[in-house]
Length: 352
Image (tube, helix red, strand yellow):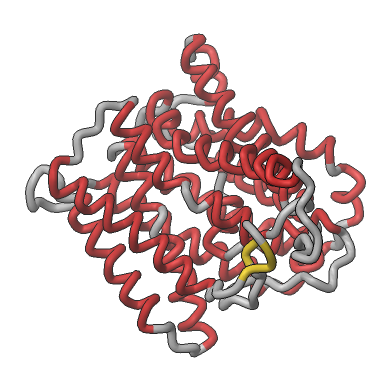
């Protein structure tokens, strides 16, 4: 979508159309923010593997049906590349789900947002590009916030769940870097890439579920889930995965990837709001201060990494070349613009 000209007055309906595009994307951020609370409500340490199998087994057939012709067009190298990414993605799901079981929904949503800091730092290390002082300051602010957040009840060792969420944030960073460097997947469309990755992850979970000592089987768990738990599972499958993916595909055709990225970046805010308002999380004075620092640091870091200093018109952020962004401008298919989101957001997108 090109920016409106300043030479002529905007149509009366233009702002409304912009909000009609923004609202579904913002709704995705809300869904993602509340997904930690939903996952915590239906998962126990004994059912993590089973819930993961059920969650993605529900949505995978829809993705396969929607992109069957594109899946058949993938080359062997693209299948291998996407499958490799799926193995990393499976590790992310495992860390996140076990993590959210052992910590609060508020902590989970805020700690995982450190991906927005880790990804540009890792990209800078790989490319040997020195981060700006502003970004380094934002990173330090975010890390200080996590320290305070995990010490809400006093200065003690972080919980197992907090550490698992931190590892999940690092794993998301690895996923983004791998996605930008596996040449075979650069020409794959986003629907096929997502489908193969999720399929690979589900296959890993299904194999793990066969081993003794890994918890309840998916079938036993499915039978034990009550109506409320099934509602939570379907929320994660339909709204946090299927709806979220197709909204992004739709939105990037009508606005800039930078704008979509900005709206999705509000996820940790909704995670904190859901944890405090709905789950009764009480982070304490230190925890609240830490939450504020994490939100401020990640927002500041996003702006510093993006280098967005200009706009293409009212409400439209200029799309500048950013460290770690995967440039697919030479691809004719407009749906592939979804792949040009900021690397930190790609990590969030592909790990849903």
